[in-house]
Image (cartoon, rainbow, N blue to C red; front, side):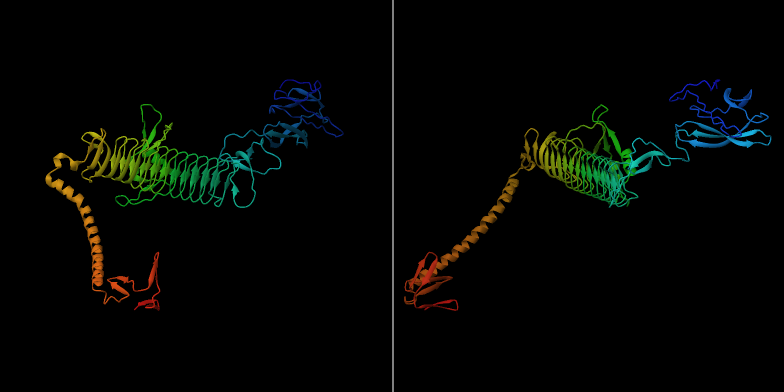
Length: 545
């Protein structure tokens, strides 16, 4: 420390870390001296040794101007008094207090020190005082301490806002709230909402409800049981469904049956299984030689190991049971269908392929435009704007349409654009084929297959139903005509015979009543009026004499 004459000083309004400041206080009416010194902005030196020069106290080589006390002028003894830890970024304080004399008669003094604490460092095994920033704290608000990490005394103060009633604010996120299961539900996002049991709504405005439903995206919603909404603005409902793509929608369920050997398929219903599925059951696929974009192709191993129901691409929709849809704007419904087998990866193209699959166990390849498969066990692995509806149909050409079962997509080395399949599991064939050059092929009518007997058989088979119907109609009409003919014959016979003397008022011919002119009567429109006295009605029975 440099020599400083404390009698030569300049008044200042403030000090810096480069200044040294010494304060002294003179003796009043006491019989012994009292010194107060300290307030070093930068540090306190442990090497300060007080001494007396010409009867005056010197400290660190500087005169204090205070006369040494004691008749014999003995050297005082300084001892450590109290040591107090001050707040971080405050100054060091030192105060000397008289403590009587020691056993040798020397005056004794205690030095009380206040040393500021250092700023918090890295978290250790223990924790002392809590350290938080206070810049954003406001008077009149209620705050809770939120640790920055497990076991840490560092953290932030979070405003607590509880309006009462059902539900609680989820700390750390403005507007976030949880309901029901306050120990396990998570609402980790601004205005996120979690209700039910063990639900997780992570992301701004995320919403999870039900049982073990999870949301990891903004504005997404999961409900039901163990459903996952992981695309922004996506929606998952039902049982075990996954909405992976942005604005995608999954409804329905995963149903697991038993594989060969009796072992059940795995269901993607927790984070580890989903990670394993992505890491081990997909293969990176590059549509072109460029590195971007790329896809993750679902392997046959994945489909043999896991049961999955999900909308995995942008703006896709999956409903039903165990269905997968990957390509943008695609839609799948039914049971066990695959509508695209490649999950879009980084910088996926924005093409709206819009495939549609319905039925059972149909499979459509990825990146095909506007294809449709319906029925059961049909396959479209190539070909845009195609349509297959039937059973075990296979379509591979652009603009191809197929109906029936077990069709042929290529005939005589030419592409078939329209077919009606009539094949079997051992032999595919078409009853009708329209080739790409417009040729129509009907195998049964080909010249090599026609004989007089086969032609006669075809004609007979075609005419037989018509002939049967004509004969049935003829017989029916003949019966009606025969009945009317008999009635006319009976009436003529009755007239020719004179009607029993010609005096009868009415005759019955078969099921027909004939009224003669002898009976006074008239007909107006469809109304018969009998005025003759020989006719009477008793108990709704008409009697004509």
